[in-house]
Image 1 (tube, rainbow, N blue to C red):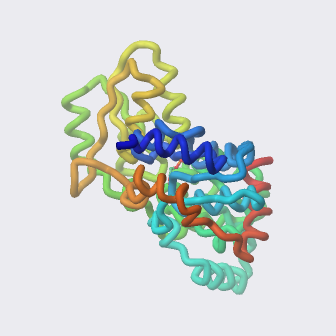
Image 2: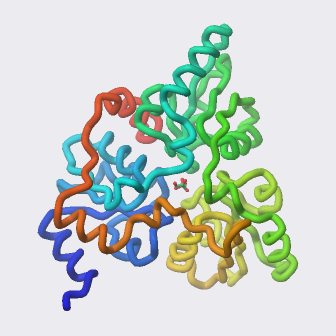
Length: 308
Ligand code: 13P
């Protein structure tokens, strides 16, 4: 019987494909990838790929972003249903209506949109940010404008704290980061009093305020790597991040902060991509992300925000 890893390697060569995987994918998929990264690193890596095909092992908005930035490439997503609760929380027609209402009130604002959103929402935006570059991009919004930040209210609240800009916040949240249990975090802290807590800025304030470090997944990797001596880290983000932390800084010990309803915090959308679906998308050349009209305007915003 052929090993599925060998099968994927052979198909990757046959199809001239590069595999890009987000840190929230299963470790076995990250292990097979040519590039791993946070949302920002993956978007930038997609523009450097020589191969004609990109397989984006992540969620739908990541594959859309890769296609937008590389229209000539074939971009495959192992499971087309791999969505995002944040993207779902902000449908483009609802955003357009809200912007219209603000304009009718005479408000002068720019729309700053988290990359976890559809291309149609990006097309309605002035800027697109990731957890990795949000502060730098917000510094580019002229002070005479208010900021409408969509769709993550927790990331938005965090950015208000660190940038000092007040924002109009859309009421969206990430289904994974929303449910970390502060009681379990405090119990873990009592058990491991010297541990440092690292939290993604998609976490609500009640988790962030008990954290030693708040940052996106790439920033978390840099933070833990800055400690030479082995330490305990309590990690408040998607549980697969522990694989990458253990991979890049294996001298530390990592403990996943549990969610309210379960012991793990795995994104059900990311989990849709399996080794079998990765193999099958290379065999069949689908699901493929097709170019859509809104990509034209979204591409301008994404390029300006993430590449320049
Ligand atoms: P980063 O990749 O920017 O850390 O954000 C995580 C995320 O929300 C992926 O969907």
